[in-house]
Amino acid sequence: MAHYAFINDTNTVVEVIVGRDENEGVDWEQHYSEIRGLKCLRTSYWTLSGINTRTKEKGFRGNYAGIGYYYDEKLDAFIPPKPSEDCLIDENTFTWICPE
Image (cartoon, rainbow, N blue to C red; front, side, top):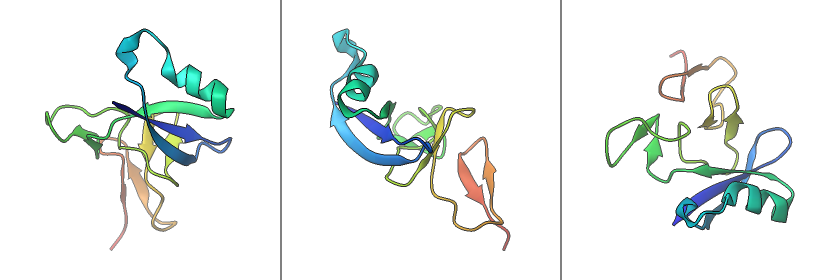
């Protein structure tokens, strides 16, 4: 079972679904994009702060996508909502660093 995030024209996640596994020979990102008319990208349920929580290796696309998350094309990562304007993104952990 794989998870997919639908992204609007501002690269904000508007929905996350459980979908078909990629190993079936079909490009499911493209398939779901065509059905919904929104960009669709796979997201990993096991990825948090750039790490796969099961294997402790590098995660897939930064974080598991959630509604309201931003997809950063440059980083190829899902970024959680920014907690405040003075926070900066840590490009290694895909989390926000905020002044205390």
